[in-house]
Amino acid sequence: MIRTTGILLGLTLLAAAIVAVRPAIASAVLAESQTSVAHPVATVRAALDWRQRYTLQVDGPPGATFSVAAVESYVDAGATMSGSADRSVQFQGTAPHSIELVAPQAGLRYWRYALVVTPTGGEHVMVRLVSTDAS
Image (tube, rainbow, N blue to C red):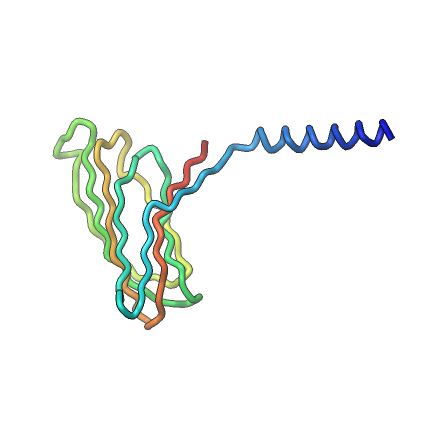
């Protein structure tokens, strides 16, 4: 009985050590929007931190098509003309879809991202901007 308890305790401590060594991954939804009959487009906007990792997710019925118009604005730490810009992009996709958003450069003072998603096949979609920090 004591030997069985000792083995179980050892396995429990081993499992706890393995979990403690793994890096914790925390995710947070920064912004989300969903299309509906009353709101035929989904809009998302957020202030971002260049040190974080972000994922843009578009979910809906598999195969649901959509178009995206996005604008990104950023200013570098020195607020220089060469390190600051407004960029826009348009693309089309199919749900489920995800894309990583990467800071245009390190050390940004200001980084904003905004987008509009329009379903093109008549099916509603959900849009999320997720921050994932591996710490």
